[in-house]
Structures are given as structure tokens and as C-alpha cells.
Length: 161
Image 1 (cartoon, rainbow, N blue to C red):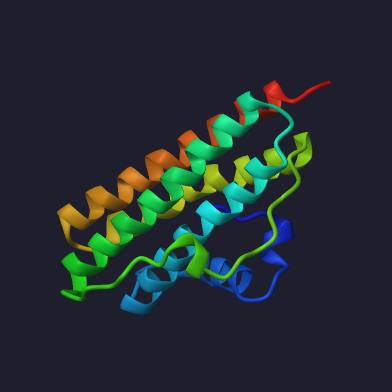
Image 2: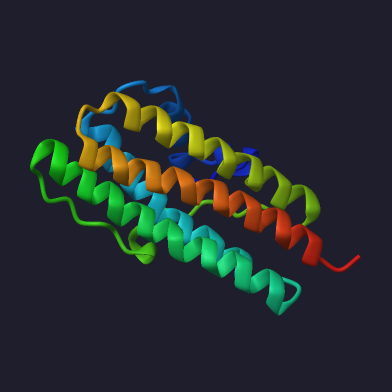
């Protein structure tokens, strides 16, 4: 669940992101929106990889992007567990693109902060959904959100001076 202030300013996804942050108990539609948002995160990281200044930064960004799609697949499984509905995960190409932050110290730090916030978001939803199997999937996403933040901080250290 990776958004920055730049991305939040774009139409569509930024509004969804802001709305989801305020949700305390997710509905089916909230989870579908989250699934779409996570799938679009892969596209954002791919955009950043395309302009990464070196292979070390590119590798860290690419790993985060792969996990964003994995988050979408877990949210799809949560939907099935909680609501019994099959919801297809959109491909990165089928999601609405939003602007990637710059691959700079400030851009990566802002994105890292958003990724760290994602951990608390997922843990909060896991605590209230009333299904341990689904909660475990959400907590796993939260753990990976924090790992994304750490990778982004590592990427900052790999930027040319």
C-alpha cells in the first residue's frame, strides 16, 4: 500500500488510499479497492525501476514491486475467506497508473514513510475482521510493508552522492 503525497494528489487512487486509511472495519468494497491499489503498486515500482540510477537501487525497488502484487493476491484470498467471493486480481497493466515519486532521497523517504504506515494499517484491519486465517494474511502484508520501508531506506544509501 504505497502512496506518497505526489501520488495522493492524482485523481482516483489517491482518493481511494486516503479513504482506506480512515476505514476501521473493511467492507467487501474496501477490500476490493485495496486489492486494486496493491496491484497498482507494482506498476509504480516498475516506473521507478525504469529511472533508477544503478542496479542496486533497481533491485530493491523491483523486489518491493513484486511483493505489492503478492499483497494483492493475499487481499484476494481475504475477500474469499470473509465474503466467499472470487475476486480477480488485476494485472499491473489493468490498473490505473499513478505518478511514481522521484527516485531521490526525498522521494524514497516519503515512500518509505508510507510503507511503514502500511504496517499499522494492515495490523489494524487484522485485529477487527474476526477471521484468524484472513487476519494472518493481512498481518503478513503489514510485515512486508515494513520490509518495503526498510528496503527504501537501503535504496537511499545506494543513491549516488
